[in-house]
Image (cartoon, rainbow, N blue to C red):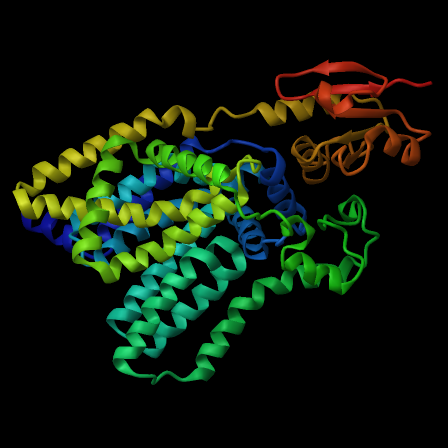
Length: 489
């Protein structure tokens, strides 16, 4: 029996498979059970009705979300879309163990690193909501594994895998372009420098084109339903963010559109210091004192003894830091963009574990102790990471729809509006109600109501600040947002 256990432990995919199952169960049990708000609700909506999301339209995520809703035959569409994040995050944790072992670390150290990654609040959060970041993490780990295999065995097949995953990742999210792709390119170039160029370009071009195919999806949707009038997200015909009027507008959305222009600024010294301090606190929140300490030891050792590998880690980490600094504190969800920072730190944690074992021995004692401490830290973060009781958004949207009279118009913010739109178009709730999603800073709500809905009963969803200066009566007060009726003159 002991020989069987040892054989299983040494089997390449045994431990990663166990990790995938365990973290898949953990994330699925603690995932948000229903429709969410804002971007997450939009992704759930476009997966349900075949729409196109906000820039950069995220077609790969949309197509995979649609596939997930078809493959899982039970639960609400919203929950099934969230299961894509569960699968991707669990896959990323499993692949993390494989990649760390490929990097020369022992299997126990690789297991520790994967566990550390899996219980970080950032990854746990990404795994339990309908968002693009779990897929980003999974693509990053797939790319890292492909690069490691190419570095060990520089064959045409492994090169094709690097290019295919690299193109998919770069087109999926800008963080992959800035943080993950350059590190992979650095390793590939170093490998080719040692072996010389011998690869055939035609297969590489072919797989690169294959990686572009998901971006045909928004083009097909525009060809089917467009052109649009630039308003109302192309509703009720379909959902297409921005309702582009021309093909030029569509390609602009694929490149980021107006949403992405101007969001990055060179920080002044005070902002840089403030955001750097916030980043340090965020890393402490993610890894805890043990993870931070091990990471510092691992980084120090790699800088001193493995400087070439430390360069690869820095190529991942430094652009991520610059990205966050350029966003600044006015972007409320900036901690989400620290995910790439977790990867080199997990690598450093695993290096430190192997270093401790090499210096002091007692492998089982040290590794088991570190694993126990890691799981304890993850348990302490359970309350902020778990979302299985998060029904707030459906409760809110259902209450609003039940309160509204027939043929009402609701003007609302993006965050609440996407939830209302999901229930209206994905589940067919209150199809007589028109939901107008617009921020008051983009078009003043009172003027919009008077201009577009002079003959309708108009309601607003938001907070007191949203309707300041507008003659309204509060109709519904909920923990998430309030419903106001526009008073007639």
